Image (tube, rainbow, N blue to C red; front, side):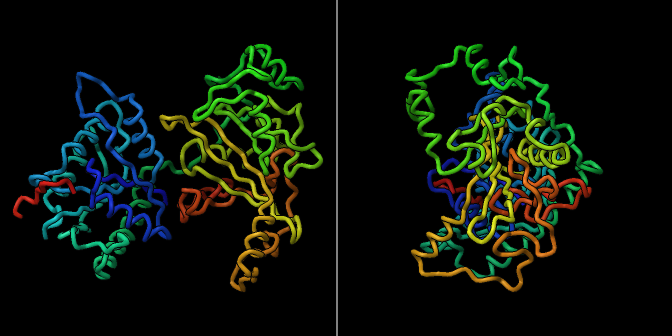
Length: 438
């Protein structure tokens, strides 16, 4: 399950941020928690609309993509901080990412009441019209006397506190599933809208060039007067010539593919001939819509994977290609790409044989692979002992006969998602006010 955590403090040293980090690390086997900072969010001012600013849009997109939200609030004069209130103002002014979103409130305070009044204040704000979050009732986690609560490794000292936090988090996981089931459609078939024929248009679409042309790269370059050869290109953190970029990308010990937000296959690093590649590609395929890169029987599975990446259900989808024998284990990684505002910009597909890495690790650590008797898959091939070896698609290497696996906790997707239709994939003192922000 993918959650985001927000600490209601902009202080450099925040015990509430420390509490969220403990939750993210200690309970990583239960949830995937990404901690979001609010330091860069401007103070709310309706006369100076910052709704489209990078910081506000980043928070909004992350919240929308998450299954649920954990907010850790300090207590200042019986209320939440001005910075957290300002953030919620932005997130309920013209945009409403918290609407219908399951939220769990926790809090830490220097005093023994553990931000109880701030939590009550925050609950009222989150449930107000315009915010419309769905806050988990009861189950308040109030961490008092927080200065003495953590050890030198930033772990909570008291085992009973950790146990209660686990019980609360487990209940929140169930709460999230119930709320999202109620909010969701009867059947999530949004993946069917993925247009693999690339009929749409994005800001990088090169119009007037036939996507199916074998010389698409050359025609697209001429159309756009693209830089080439020793022309310099300014990158995020570097300046390289086009030739240097090609040297760099073609020397990568893996195969890379770029499919844009319009589902058009626009690049691969040409570091080997098609016959020698793990996932065969040819120069003439560059520019093709994704529908041309897969057999028809694989199209629904491809649509499902792309839709999961586009909608934030996962940022990384992993797919092994079995049947290569004990000396080769080919993995396909489909990584969602985003711009600075968090908007989806396409897929980076990475293909590599991980067996040389495994063998190197084993030889340098003196360890050996041992079969797990309880494993459900063949430890060598990764395929089910009962399943026939699927035939990989010549372009992606992905099986046309196997539905995508459910992403695991590393990918950021739910490790225990709700079931969906069979054709779809299964897809973390008195007032309590402090002189120092906590």
